[in-house]
Image 1: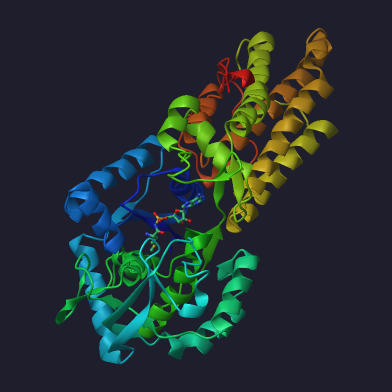
Image 2 (image 1 turned 135 degrees about the horizontal axis):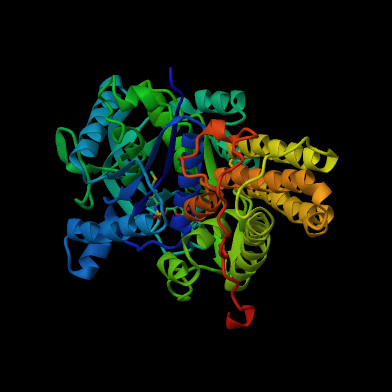
Length: 509
Ligand code: MSP
């Protein structure tokens, strides 16, 4: 039986256009999807858009459009950006699609029939931008504790989900499954939150219309988070059994930002429990980007637009930077200086230079024909060993979503490669005909290491890796087996590489 891997991103609200925060999660998911596919998994990678709710309705009114017109327009921006970033999801779900509405109605009906949804009355403080109700005591200076904006008092008839009933089961699940919520600090926050006690959750609204109607009571629309979270199963064809839903659920990992962890680690699992469905294997909350030291916001006009970054620096530089600069899970700061520095030092100097130097030498000393290696000397064997360790390290790192650490492991090998050239000094050996075999072994080792490096990099920088592999005479689509030592065949033509990443003048920034 083949192994499967299911990864999701949040579905993005269509009242805003995409920024690096959205690109970040989606790139991380894409890297994971590509890596797992390389390793032979059958992968389902899901992203999409969250199109219902008061926030979208208000934005549409303000723009003089219907909510669906707004959604149709903004969805294109997200899809175009994913294309532009070489992000290739298996499916893109929109919550206004029939398949989604059908699934949401189904799960609502099921939980209602089962007794965990009941009709009651609601009165509390509501923050529209966050689509969240707050109790009096949670407010800070009378404002929303998350975004600091004013809240309004709402009283309405509402359907409630009996979340309180699942408090103990959820806690037991979190405690029995240390990997369920990550990173650890976030897990502790959720444990503390659940221990404080779970209230029943209002899951319908009567104050506006833009949403999925409650089955058999059309005065109500279903709460946008109940609707949105369900996308993770409706995209798989839920409630239909036997297809993708049976194949891919439970999800391997929901990638999200830290601000929406409670919805994913408390609400969603309890909805699933009530519906009798298995829980996600992992929910991972990454940190937030600030920009040049400041919170990214429309009012500060410092929102980083991914299209602009790609036009200026190239797709793979952006993909690399976002995943390398900050350990996944921590907050980080975006700055042009940091990005240019990474391009110049990691990509141009280390990665690009190694390929240039080695392909140039094979051309100079062997007319571009890869020589047959002789027995490996100690230095060569150590370099090979380091490369093999890196392959295993990357695997472990990506299981923990430690993208940055995984890239560091790859870059240690790249630096070792540049050092290996300096230590073996091929230019000296080239002067001595008796050292011909030794020189050939060194060239083979250098290129073979880079073949393995670039196969791993196909997940992170698909274009750059394909280009580099092309110089190494490797054109077959890489597979997991190709990570084993010895793939390059003597006699292969090695092209002299051009710069993979041209240096950028730092003063230009
Ligand atoms: N629609 C909901 C998610 C529903 S999932 C069932 C939503 N959408 S959103 O468009 O507002 O935000 C999506 C994601 O963007 C969140 O994961 C959030 O953490 C992320 N980010 C928004 N700003 C960010 C940064 N400045 N930095 C990193 N990620 C950020 O929430």
